[in-house]
Length: 396
Ligand SMILES: CC(=O)SCCNC(=O)CCNC(=O)[C@H](O)C(C)(C)COP(=O)(O)OP(=O)(O)OC[C@H]1O[C@@H](n2cnc3c(N)ncnc32)[C@H](O)[C@@H]1OP(=O)(O)O
Ligand SMILES: N[C@@H](CCO)C(=O)O
Image (spheres, protein in one colour):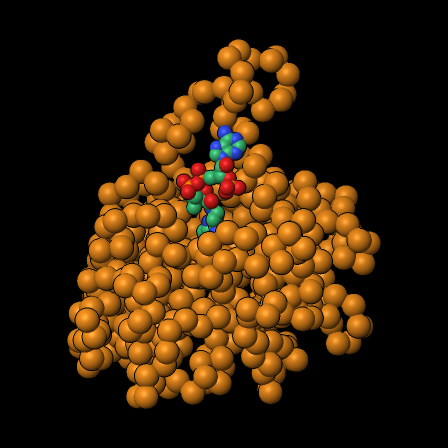
């Protein structure tokens, strides 16, 4: 399957939208999704995965929210890349998010390209892919759609909502939108609003896509092209922000790639150049360019405090949720100060919150890597929350 689908993610995205991969469960909503932009999106579907078993009380469900370019494939082999899912370090039997104990759900966000309705889906008004006719979606819209999925699964209250980066934004939005439905929350490497610098990086990426002649004003699927170069450059620029200067230095330094002296050309002389080119070109194989525009835009618009009169604490006023907020010392995309602002707001609203800053040089994407302190923190937090929630201990 991986070989069959790889190579043309836009066509793959389209196929996923029309006929999702057999691994993927699909929820076809029976009512429209009311979006913040004023549009009622209909029809719409959500592609999702579940792992583990929902208990009789329906009280052991954990919703995982994926990051910018992630998807629902958390633990299984990814159907497009053939690689392991994005959180195999954290999720699985005996792991902190223990699929022998918890029922784990992850869905592809609205606007995404792995089976949920997005810009590659067919616009019922035209019979063609939406392209830029797809309405702009927000983090709150993504969460609204997830809540409809959770309703469909018959779950009233989630034991935990967890996620990193854009996933962490969704975690915060879940508590703000549905305070009674979230027992515990684990926002990692995230912020309550997207900073000016982060919006700036996203804009560079979007402009790179839109400057590619193969983008065709978003109509590339009709032209049987893909804006490969633009999307790859967008990812290269973004990928730098997911790492850190010390990590780049440790991994590559000024080392040459397969040569021992410079070529005096614009070839990828340095390892770091070769690495970034690889990250860019491999990304094009798994992600759709228009989805990149929409999902980055959703992050840009996120400003939770602004929705509550500029007082972030008000977003959590009614919450009884147990929080654990996590940041990484070398994350310059969502620096610790962003997490601290969330913690201060939670304290001001009287919420139960613990805060862990993890020392690492791995940068923002540390949450995707084998980071022992994150694994220990997640395990400890979920164990304590499970006791407080009255979940039975795991049979040994
Ligand atoms: C939360 C979610 O929903 S998941 C989001 C979607 N997933 C992601 O964003 C993951 C993509 N991100 C990454 O891969 C990030 O680099 C990280 C930080 C998470 C991974 O870090 P690491 O495991 O340390 O891998 P690293 O950054 O070294 O990259 C390894 C890749 O670079 C390649 N590479 C390494 N050095 C070089 C080089 N000099 N030249 C060319 N390629 C190179 C490797 O061959 C490997 O390729 P592959 O991924 O195609 O197998
Ligand atoms: N590297 C991850 C996190 C970015 O915030 C992704 O692409 O989704």
